[in-house]
Length: 221
Image (cartoon, one colour):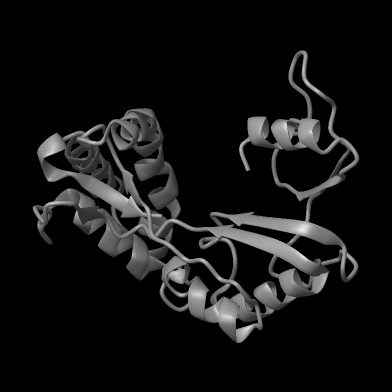
């Protein structure tokens, strides 16, 4: 979750404890904010959880499609179910990096579509980068109840006529500008063997298309 949301939760529920499996720097305090009771742990999510059973009220899992091995997902969800207390909740968020157009104007020839196609193809057989489209059924198979699954179009720029989505798209522009090369560099050049010059040309074109309002590009979230 975003750090300010954790801080808000910590302020509202000051007796709660926050356990995180993290691979980044600690961010448990902001100036003037309430201090969270935090426990940070660096771990391999492709292995069985080290937390005891019936331990958490809430598990939040986000953007792990390129990290968790394809065959691990059923047991990963089983681990989540095991560590949740009875009546606990799990929230899972994944982006399906198959770019779409709200008006259908993106074709197979567009750089954004070629970026998506190459990215998805690179991970076939090792990672399930389409996992977001399957979580509903997997959760049901693992015995979860009261499942609410939804797709939210995440605009790549500020093309939407809806004020809220337009603001989200505006904020997302810099993210997309950085994401297109950073997320695809390894799979496209190291796994698929794309030459560096071709990769740079693809990224340049994809960035331009992401900024093109008439294409109305989005990632399914």
